[in-house]
Structure formats: structure tokens, C-alpha cells
Image 1: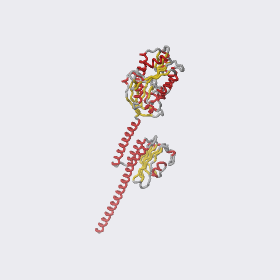
Image 2: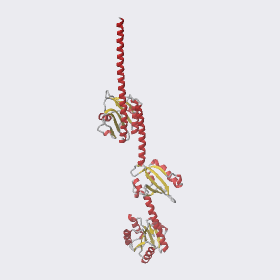
Image 3: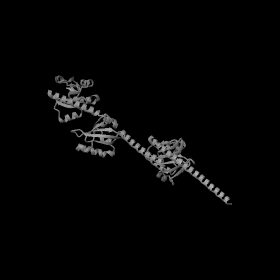
Amino acid sequence: MVLSGVKAKLLVVDNEQDQLVAMVSLLRSAGYEVLEAINGAEALDQVRENHPDLIILDKVLPDKDGLELGKEIKSEEELQDTLVILLSQLKISPENRSKWLEEGVDGCLTKPISKGELLAIVESMLRLKESESKYKSIFENTGTATIIVGEDKTISLANSEFEQLSGYSKEEIEGRKKWTEFVPEENLDKMMKYHDLRRNNPDSAPRNYEIKFKDKNKHLKDIFITVGMIYGTDKSVVSLLDITERKKTEKALSRELKINSDLAILSSKLLESTPIEDISDLVLKYAQSFTRSEFGFVGYIDPETGFLISPTMTRNIWTECHVKDKSVIFEKFGGLWGWVLNNKQPILTNQPNDDPRSTGTPTGHIAIETFLAVPAIVNEDLVGLISLANSNEYNENDLEIVKRLSDLYAIAITRKHSDDALRKNEEKYRNIVEKFLKLHNEILIEIIRKDEL
């Protein structure tokens, strides 16, 4: 017998010399490499040193019970895959056979054994071991997290990728955990429905779908799952591909497209010479949407007075802070947003109450839980502000997006100042022309009067 191109190594353990010699001779003539031992101690040394593929073990040994020796061998991690055939002098009852198999023995035979029976069982068990070895190798090296699930939802087998995905060891998973323990509540009904459908009619449940997966640390991951039934059993093989990063990337790309689209709309409004009040409304709307902010306001600096004029605030600020008019003028700059204006630097803080730059929240105003503000600057000159509050949590991406908005808002403010200056100049020149024409007419009238005299 050749196992995967290498002769299988056997160990025969029997204290009856005649039977030991007969079995060793038979097995060697069949092409096996055969070791021998006459007691438990010698057998254990042989197993630990030579790692045989299969042991033929007499239950009755002079120094140790064969069954106990088999259990001891199976208990050692390096030897647990060794096949053990237990030989009994007495007829083996169905109860004892079941018990011995449950305790780790791989096969049971009653003495005397015919040559044909011995060779047949040895060859069949070695072939089974070879098949299991190939199966486990394929299972272990699928490249994705893979598990075997029984009808009762218990995971009977898990590979190392599933260990990494779940955060649990194989010992914690196999035979101990049900797959339902890894599925959050929102996906559980669908998964259990598919589980039952698949066992009644494999084609009635989808093979591929996406779910959320809950690992040992309660972190949720996006998973693409593939499920198939193992032919002739009630078990299914489940492959799980972690697509969390891909989903994050898709979400980020979708968000970036939305941001670019909205910024393009805002840019077109600038080209259309839209009033600063409308631009401010749009900037605030986008800033809140991009950063998921509950509150916010934007404003521009009056170049003559240096005051901050806010054409708009979120309606909940009007209500909760008792702001009567939509357009508000701030003569003094206070709190965190005042620090932003005074220092021409942005602020991002998710703990504003602990920020040394904060002066606290005045009585009657909304509670600030998180805060983000960016100054609008042109050529190092402060021209405006975007101020936001009470997102779940601000991050650097939020800050970068608001900076992009502040650049556009700065352009809108600069254009407004230019338009205001142009209108003032037009009015000034119009007044000069009107005064000149009036004076000119007065002089003509005076000349005409003198001529008439």
C-alpha cells in the first residue's frame, strides 16, 4: 500500500508473540513499513518517535489497557491524526463498539482475524485518511474563510481564515458555536430562512448574497457569502469573503461623487452672480449634509465695520437660541468660532467642553457636543466663516470638505465685495455727473438771464 507516493507506516502492538509475528509478516508482504511492540510503554515510545500512520493495538496488554493507550495517543496534538484499530479477544457488543469509537478509536476487530479482513480494513482506513488529508488540505487552503455547518446550525469545521475573520480559535468554534452567533439581528431571519430552505430544496435558496458579520469583538463586517450543500449529507459548506474595505471604498467614491456634484452646482451659482444670501444658504446646506451636522451657520465679514454678518442659520438655532431675524450681525467674536476668526485657523473638536479655547455655552443656547469651523480667507485676508456643530463625530475628511466649501464661499464673498464697491463707484460717479449737469444748467440759465438784460 502506498500513501500519497510514500509507503504507509504501521505499528502492531500485541503481547502474543505468534499473532504479532503473523500480522507483521502479512503486512510487510503487502508492502507496508511495519514497526512492532509487545507492551504499552514500548508502543508509546514507538509512536512518539516514528509517528506511524496506523496502529493495530491489542486491548489487553501486560502493562496497560489498549483502549486507554489509544486515548492517550489521541490526546497528544502531534499524534491525534494517527489511526487506531483496537483488537479484542472477546466479541465486541454494539454498545462497546459505539463507546470505543466515541472515545477516539477509529476501528474495532475481534480476534482471530482473517488475512483478507485485516488487509481490507487497513487499506480502507488508510485510503480514508488520505482522502480526509486531501479534503482538509483543500478546505484549509481555499483562500477564503470557510466553515462546515450542520442542520442544527453548529459549525463542525472551520479553517484558519475563519479564525482570523471571527477572532475565535478553532477550538472555540468547532462543535461549540452555531453560525447564528455571528449574524446580527437584522440579518438573522433571512439567514435562518435560507438555512431551512436549502435543506429541503438546495435550489430554493440563493447561493450568493451579502450579510453583516459579527466578530468576537462585536465589530460588524460586510461579507459576501457563498453556500452549497455537501452531497448526501445535511451539512453545508459556507465560504465568507470580507468585503468591508471594498464597501467602504464604494461608499467613499459615492460620497466623493456627490460632493463634487454639489460643489459644481455651487460653482455654477457663483458664475450666475447669485446673491450672497442664496450662496450662504447653499453653502450651509451642503456643509451640514457632507458632515452630518445638526446645527450650523455661515457668515461674511463686512469690510467697513469688521463685523460678521450671518445671512442664515439653521432653523433649530433660530428657535432654540431665540434668534428673531434671519440675518444676524456679530460685532464681537466669542467662543470657539470666535477663536477661528481671530486666529484665521480651523477647529475640529469632538470634545468642545474640554477645549481650552472654548468659553462655554451661554444660557439658552444649544449644547455643543462636537464642533467644526473653518475660516474663509482670500490672500491671507479673513472674509468669512463656516461653523458647524453636533455631528456624531467629526474627522479629517469632514475638515477637508468644509475647507473646499470655504474656498468657494470666499470667492462668493469677494465677488460680493467687488459688486458692492462697483455699485458704490457707479453711484458716486452718477452723483458727480448729476451735480455737474445741475451746475451746468444753472450757469446756462444765469447766462441767458444776463443776455436778456
